[in-house]
Image (cartoon, rainbow, N blue to C red; front, side):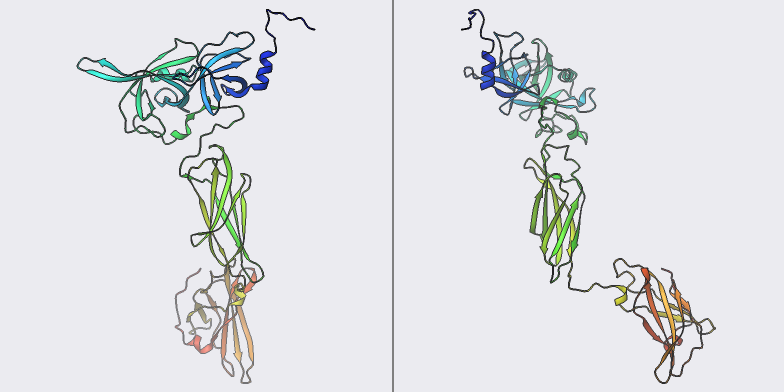
Length: 452
């Protein structure tokens, strides 16, 4: 049997207890384990914290979804452990360092313990006696919080707590580890942002929401990004394509979008919600993960559809969508192309006073009707007719503008005529349009034309 030294506590007893009953905490953002126990019930929410590592007054502990501050100096161990008192930091206070020499990340947000000196204190000025309310705000002493000294005694040196403005009148370093900031109740200011507890003098910068310093809330392995604001506008670009509905296959709409631009700006980005609407009613919906940038909706009838894409963040704030439209066509209707339609031009003049016989007409009326096709010119042909009904091609021309010299003096046993065909890209011809010779000779000799 091993001999026991009665003057020494068992070395591993506390470590064993910490291993079995220890709870996860974050000490100044670092993941640790500690024993948390309850003291007597008092005015403040205090707890004992026991560790096998050193603690210091002012240290922040994140435990049980709350922030706490070490309230006593615990730099010397008791037996084999360090035991201290931690007090709940019930308030989150924003110090607006915009009014000091800080130019970025000037909204310093800090967990704080607040105590009152008294509800109200009489203060006698030269002409009158005033009634003040004074509080003490305790925050961890760091390089960041020492910048609060720049707010002491200046007109814009205020904080907001519970819809009340407080002037910062002094900072004490008497107890090592935390700052004791004395604040006296001031007057309400219409420029102050009371919902967010931020003091502003006159107006605020447009990018103020991007200038929070949240370093005190950082926890090892845990995101500390701000939550997405109410009425946030989803920031991406969405487009949609569709296939036709026919007797063989139902229509589909395929939506694609770019990644949410602010998915790393706000906390808990979880992906996208996609809605398909027709006549204002939801037809279908999908929720996809953060790496998926496309969604397909099938079994759709002929009609017009709206696609809405919402970014999803891990809170219930209102988020506005980005939308686009898509049309499911009738797949049973043949596709109209230039070669299935008849040329449609209007002749305006034919100069039969000379041998050139210049013919002028207006631009093809359906030049922009065919998706994917561009009008490139015209083919003009001259025919003569015999008594027996035969037609003979006498000449033809291909032109790029709405005029052509087709000569004069054409005649046939049964008259003569011309045809005009509009030509589109890739050599696609419309069906010819016929004009009798007497129609041409009946036109004015001159007429205006305009290139297209």
